[in-house]
Length: 64
Image (tube, rainbow, N blue to C red; front, side, top):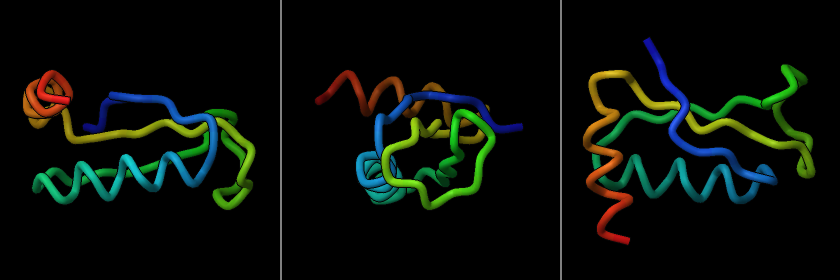
C-alpha cells in the first residue's frame, strides 16, 4: 500500500522529491492529484511511498 507524504505544485518539483527520496533508498511514485494524465507541468502532484517506509520519510524530512 502506498501513502501520500508530500504534495508538489508542479511536475518538476514532484520529480525532484522523487529523485531525492529514491536517492535515500525509498521507492517513490508521483501521481497527479486530480487523477489526470501525468505530464501536465502545472498540475498538483502527490508524492507516494510504501506505507512501511513512511517513518523513514519522516526522519529524512526532519533532517532537512
